[in-house]
Length: 400
Image (cartoon, rainbow, N blue to C red; front, side):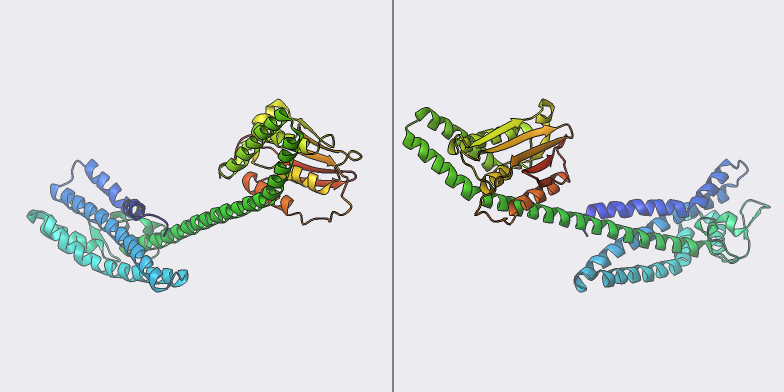
């Protein structure tokens, strides 16, 4: 079981206290009536007191023993039956049923023995008689108050009033009630444990899937990015443009820093993502000078909204990879927010003649990460002359 031993004992203790009080509710009321009776003889008051304490402690003991026995038997059976749930639960249920039957049959003997010892010598005989009379199935019990005769259900009524029959045995019904409550409580705890196990398993699968998506994204980006970045840097060095080379190196370091920290973050603000996008688009602009253009427009309030880290990068890479970029067909990529809490990345389509349709792995990975981290889906539109991807923004990060 997932629950710690300390927590299990606390649950068992609490449940036993509640069941004991419920099973002895009538005796508690009877005790109150006796306390309010100013004409009550001293011996009768003492007997009622001892009877009440014995019954309260007995049903607490009865409940707690069944709870602990079930817990121990379940763990032992789980090892013996090698995690076969039905057999393990059946063994535990059978064990506590047998023990409950034995304790019920032992109740009259224990009650008589203990009550005989704790009662005062002057009321010993009356105390023993009362213990026997309470355990009778039918007939009338004489109250120790002179001249009063009480029906058994007035001396000891509890949960049996809910299941009343012509021949009702209060003790039997109370023991059955406690036993069934313990059984149902343990089944409920099993269901809660299974739910927790499923939740933990889901979180584990979620983390693994997210890591796989991230690894796939990095595997897609890194080869293209490093190769293209080195080519751009090489071109600048050969041209002898020192200031532009330094600016290129500065933006390149910003891009590297952002990508390296992406495995430590899941969601970032739009401002952080766009700062990275500007650094990355600068590198591309140097590489495709006069042939690749970017327009980035984001409403100020949305800069503090959230999206998964590195969401825009694969979309830019996708546009550059699958479209012609030349003086005749310059590529324009637009990045902007809408009033519907969306970030849109759009570009005009000029497909390469030799370009195949592609596997779409990059978009699938992005969709999977987005769905897992935000619970929302991206929208892809590939109609007419434009290819457009819509990314939902979050007002605040989601903590699952």
